[in-house]
View 1 (tube, rainbow over the protein chains, first blue to last red):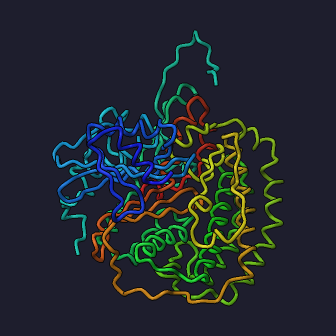
View 2: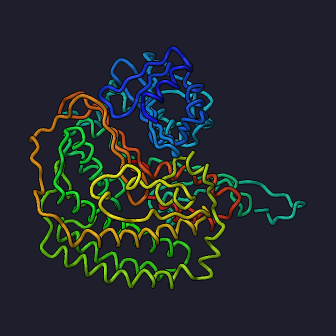
View 3: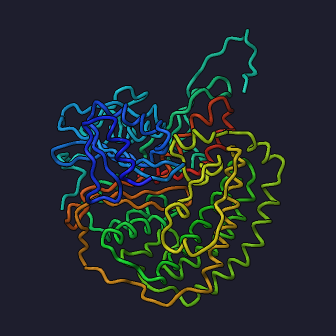
Length: 153
Length: 372
């Protein structure tokens, strides 16, 4: 299915979605925080889309906004879509977990929480994945400073 | 599997640690097991013992420097990791490398895959009590390491790739020694089969153990031999082809049982396929430049780039977000190891601790790839 056809289907689900193909090889869709779970479950369930394979979950700090990028593929049709979620709330960013839709999200969301401090509601076991539990701050955020361990050129 | 403990006996669940320094965990991985007698109720991996934050380090490095960091993720697929970063940079700069580079990269990638599967085979045998396999595998793997040493100057972390091509041309002995290796190894895989695949004890320890269903494999994001053992077609070399894989004929090794033995037979089959790919290419390495010139300071145009490659463990994805400067704004490595490890709880639940060792070994865990 072409990106245009995918966009035509997905755009009917909500009027708050923004589509873009600029500066990327995939079709990108920016989804508002409160609709993440419903849009994602429809992406997986829709008979013509079947995005059943979440192959990459990337935490992002765009400077002002924090967010997550979900790369999706359908193992049946081999088409792709990239779902982006953004928030300007740096104190308490949170939205629904998609780990019940794709099991792989469980670990990857823990990784995002570990490095970016984004909380995922309804996650079965949200805690730091790599860093020790007592670690302060979220190291992959752009405003993170650690004078002891970081070499800044 | 039903617990054999009689119901009128009072039993209690308890925790034990497997690792972080357990020989069967292949590196510093700690598994927290909840067990009832010898039956596993829950497995929770505790990660991060060798987390180095390679993604953060990438943000301060140039694109040439990033290539070197990727060796230290899945060190058994180091060449393929390097290739992934080079491909993403080449994609962003719209550089077309010569056919010679593509073919040499493909041959070396397949040799890497063979070396990785040999080590996996040796260690799998050792994990479940067949020590001989370890020595057989290392004898044969040594030949590949020698080829690498001659051409790349290194045996494990090769750094042979650069954005735009290769560091230097192949060694004059490369073709000859690779052919010698293929002839040698073709007689050895049947020996592997005789020694381990057909062994009754081995089959009893792997058949019907740790079954992963097709739906779960996709949902958990399992890739590589773990997914293909469950009948999921997931070979990036075929689906999103790169380098010279479109020029060769090979079959995607698949098995449908989803148990430990299925994952085992997929890897054995992959060794044959890798030998076949190398055979098709080794006599016809085209002439051409080994390096397409790039600027000394590489700056990627503003945008997002993604490249997927098939390492010996599955799909490696490299996401690069560039703002147009000499350093990437954000790099994400989608490592096959973390997603493959996430299936472990559903596979091991209800089986015995001894089976967990077989399950872990057939998932083929490399801890630096999980931790990054």
